[in-house]
Length: 198
Ligand SMILES: C[S@@+](CC[C@H](N)C(=O)[O-])C[C@H]1O[C@@H](n2cnc3c(N)ncnc32)[C@H](O)[C@@H]1O
Figure 1 (spheres, rainbow, N blue to C red):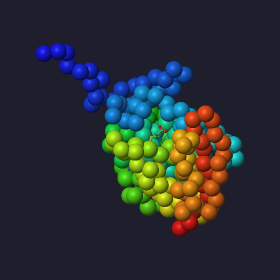
Figure 2: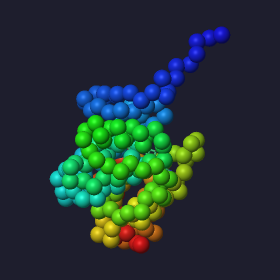
Figure 3: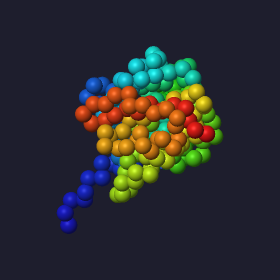
Figure 4: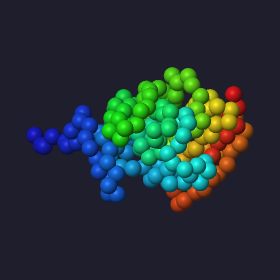
C-alpha cells in the first residue's frame, strides 16, 4: 500500500495569510479557499470610482455568493447593514467567523442564488460562480443576475465582476434597464447594473 493522499486536513478551518498580509479563515472545499480572487480584488479596488463613494459602504449591502467573505471584509463597515449569502455551508461558517473577527455585524444566510432572501438592498456585490460541479453553467450566472435585480431597491445598483469572455451584459438585459461596462483588465471586466426590472 502506498501513502494515503494528502487531504490537506479537509474538515478543518484554518487561518490563511495571503502574500500581502491579508488574513482570513478558510478551508479546503471553498471556492479559491487559500487565495484572494483576482477578479474580486479588482472589483474592490474599482468600487469607489464605480459607485462614486468612499469605502466602507453605507446602507444595505448584499454580498451574493460570499464565499469566505472577502468582498464584505474589504467593503463593509459599522455603517453597513450587511447580508451575505452562499450555498456552501463551510463558506457560510467561515464568512461568519471572518466578519466577527473584524467586528462586523452581518446576517449570513445559506441560499441557492439568493432564493431565501426577502429584502431589498442599495448595493449588491457579486463575483458569480461560473462552474457548477464539473459542468460550466452559463445559466447559473444568469440566475445571479436575476437575483440581484429582484433583491435591489428601485434606485439600487449591482456591481459584478466576471471573466472577460462571459456575456453578462446580454444576460442582464432581461433584468436591468441600465447596463454599463465600467472597466476591464487583461482577465476581468466590471459591469455596473441599475434600474432593476421588477
Ligand atoms: C467566484 S466565487 C466568489 C466568492 C467570494 N465572493 C469572493 O469574492 O472570494 C462564487 C461563490 O458563489 C458560490 N455559489 C456557487 N453556486 C451557488 C449557488 N447556487 N447559490 C449560492 N452561492 C453559490 C460559491 O460557493 C462561491 O463561494
